[in-house]
Each structure stands twice: as C-alpha cells, then as structure tokens.
Length: 419
View 1 (spheres, rainbow, N blue to C red):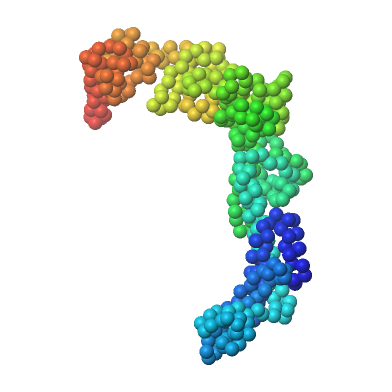
View 2: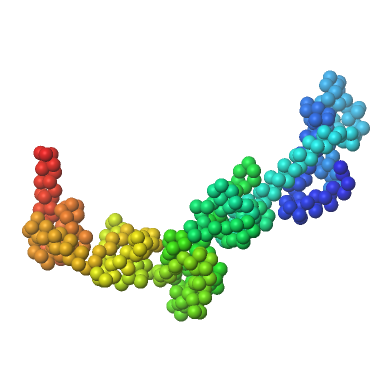
C-alpha cells in the first residue's frame, strides 16, 4: 500500500490537476475508515501522512491514567512512558498502530474513499475552471445526441447544448466540431453541469471579439446586442478614440470580419449600429436601414413615437415586425412607428379634441401634442409652472388650462358613476 506513496501522490496530482493536499487528505480519510472497520469504530484513531517515510500512519489515542479501567481508551503511566518518557497523568498520547494487517475489505473501502475524493476533487477543478469561463466561447465535439440536447465533449469534461439553445436552421451529427457560449455552470451530485448556448446575444458579441483585435484591445466596445437567432441581429458599437471607426473595424476589409461571424451564425444578417448617448439618435440609427423623419420622446414611459415617410414604413417595421422589435431590444425603448399620413390623421383628431376640450388655439394644441400631452389626464397632473416651461404661456393661462383638464376628468368620472 505504501510503495513510494509520495511519487504516486505527485503523479496523480499532476495528471488530474488535483492539489497534493487534497489527495493526502483523501488517503488519510481512506486509511482511517479502513482502520476503524478493522479495529473498531469505538477507538479514538487518527491517520496522518508522514512525508519522510512516504506512508500514512495510524495512531490510537489513549489517556494516561494511574489505574486502567478501559483498555481501549486508557493507558497506564508506566506503559505510556515507553512511548513518551515525558508524559504525565491526564495526557493524551498517540500510539502508532500496525496497519499491515488491514485486509482486502479494508483495502477496498480505502480504494472507494480515495476514488470518491478524487472524483470530487476533479469535479471541483472542472467547476472552477469553467466557472471562470462563464460568458466565454469554448470549442468541443458532439459526443452524442439525446432526447432534447447534444452532449458536447470539451476535452476534460462534457457539456450540454440544449436544442432550444441552437440556431433553428442548424443540425449536428456525432463528431461535428462546434463553438458554444458558456451560459451556466452548476455543481450537482454527479459533478458539475456546463450549459452551452448558440442563441444568446453574448455569443454574437464574443464572436466579434474573436474576429476584431480592436475589441480584444479595448479600443472598441460592443455595448449591447439583440438577436433573433439565425435570422437577424443588431449590435451597438462604440470607440472612445475618434480616429477609430468602430463600424469599419467590425466589418473588416471587404466585409471579412463580419462575414466570418455571419458564417458561424448560419447566415444571420447583422446590423452594426453606432452607439449614441442621445436616445433619439440611437433609436434612429437602430432602425436602419429605414430613414426617420420625426421623433417624439416620452421619457417618463421610456417610449418613442417614430415618424417615417410612407415609403419607409415597411422598411422601418421590417418583416413580421423584426426590425422595430430588434431596435427596441437593442435600445431599451418602447418604439411605435407611424407613417406621415397616419400621423396626420391621428394628430388632427387629437389636436381638434385638445382645442375643443381645453379651449386653446391650434398652435398651442399642436405644442401640447408634440410634447406628448395629448389628453386631459396628461395635462391635469402638471403644475402651472411645469406647463409654463413647456408652452411659454402665462402662469394664469396655464392654471386655467390645467383646471379645465381636471374638470373634463371629473365630468368623465361622474358620467361613469351615473351609468
């Protein structure tokens, strides 16, 4: 059992990537477990690795007493002095045991404990390694295909790629080589589970990072990405260096860089959008290739009404609403798109209602409309000072308009109660 144990610990540690301390602890625990099975659980035993001898020593601890009543836990002073000449009554001394008699069952127990410890240690090494790779891309080989996922061999361990995390148009076979985004790493009783994704926006961002040196160097940043996997995606890029064109860098010479990403994503069309701190400009860029005519902001609800020429409407919305949906995800703003002719129809009715209900001029009604103050409720919650800043009319007129708006609300409430 103890043939050059130091060499075995050293080799297993290197091969499995497990700290020597962990292996020593496993061996100590295994020998202790085997010794207790052999000599009895009731004994106070302790196993310790002796690095000089290269073996695990087992000691039985006994209390030094004048008169021995329990031979398994007590030792006379006379006998104790044979092991430790300086011991005294009340001391606890460890007596080295002969473990050469440990039988086959005990050795098997030791083996099981060691194997379990090694498995646990290997699992911890893999968990810590891949936990540090969260949000990175890894490469593996399809090992097998199960009911709802692929099992991907990453070399040291396997990962799971659920079908729902694959691009709709792609199918893999055994031994196919693939890239995946490390979405999650979880510890469990069997070791650890590594979850991969090819649909996550982070996968797209990391692919660009692999292709574009300026992103790796931090000169260019991809701030956010939005995807409808396999169909279309939008990424927002930014550079603090005014001499660097972030879009040009991501596209590459003759489109080489972006095409490499498109190829990996099975033909997914990618729009590269310049980030802008002005939300209106950012949204307008995100709606490319459509051209925007007007933008109405509602910061409180984080919403925008986008107006485009009639011939740009279908382009702005996109097939099945895809373009506006991705632009909304990318920017974080709710986006409503209308054409100039639609706006004129809806605006005219709103302006007429404001003129009649609040008894204001068409010019003032248009100002209120353009400031997203389009019904009595929007106006009633303002103070005269706030309305004055928006319209530049007198405080007295502002007060009258607000009171008129509140009268309209009360009238509506009374009519509802009567009904």
